[in-house]
Image (cartoon, rainbow, N blue to C red; front, side):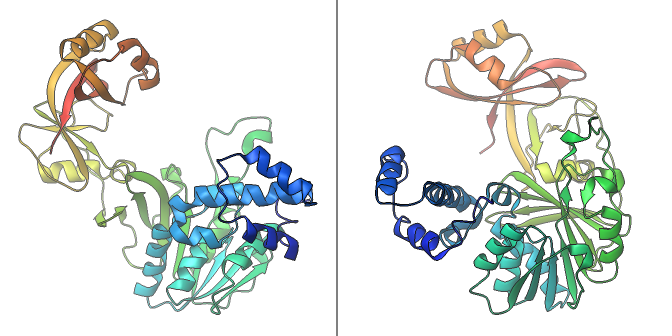
Length: 390
C-alpha cells in the first residue's frame, strides 16, 4: 500500500479540500479524533494530514503553487526549487527547443516549469504512485502528459531531454561505497550521458557529484539559490561545452564561467576576509575569481580569501577582521565578555571545532554583535572576530 493510495480517491480529495484552511498547529490530536469520530478512515486521515504538512513545507520551494500540489516525503526532498526549474526551462528555450521528455520526472517539479514556459512536456516516472502525483500536479497544463514507465524503455519523440537520475541506496550493499561510479545511479550514468549526447539535454545531479565523473564534453553548472548550493546541472548540445560555471539564482542572477581552473595565490591574512558563494567554491572557480579581483587565500586548501582593501562582488560575502586569536575556548570567551558580545554568528572551515560545541561554553551576554570565523591561518588554528562589510 502506498503513502497516497487513499488520498487519490474522490473521498480523499474531498477531505483534503475541506481541511486546506485548517491550522494543523492548533491541536492536531483533537483534529484527528474529530475526523475519526466523523467516520473517516484512519489511514485516509493520516495521508491527508501528512499531505497538508508537506504542502506547508513545500512553500519554500514552490511558493503559492504548493497549495495546489500533491507530494511524497522523498518527492518533496528531491524536487527542484521552482525558480531553479524555471532556469532549466529557460536554457531549453534559449536553445530553441520546443518539446522535452523528462526522464524520471518525480512529482513533476521540473516538468511543471517546462510546461509553464510553453514547452511540450512528456514526463516519465517508473514509480506508479509518484507518477499519479505528477499527473495531478500537471493536470492544468494541456501541453504536459505523464507516463508511468521505465525511462530506459521509453520511446523518445521530443526535441530535448531532461534527466534526474537517482543515486541508488548504497546502505544495503554490505560495504559502504567510498567512490561513486556510473552504476551507482538509476538509470546508469553511462546510459544517461550517451543518450544526452543525441539531443539538447540537461542532467540534474547533486552538487557534491564526483568531479572525475563529469564528461569533458558537458557544460558543468553548479547552482546556488539564495545562498544554498542546490545542484550540479550538466548540459549537452546547449552551448558552452567544456566550460565550468557557477550560477547564482535569487533576486538577481549571476554567472561566472571559465574553460580552465586556476588556483588562488597563497598569501597572508589581511584586513578583509571573504567567504565565496558555495557554487563558486564547488565549481573550482574560486581561484579564477580571486586572481581577477586581486585576492588571495591564507591557508592552503581552505576556501576563504583576503585582501588589504575592500572588494565588492556578488560572489563574495565580506568581513572586516577586528581581532585574530588562537583557537582557544577560554581566550574566545574572554574576548566576548570584554566586548559584551551577546549575538555571535559562528562560521568554521578547516577545523574540527563546531559552532554547536563552542557556543554553550561562551555564555554570551551583552548587546554587542560579531561574526566568529574558526579556521586556519597559515596552517595554524585561529579564531577571527569580524564585522560584516556593509
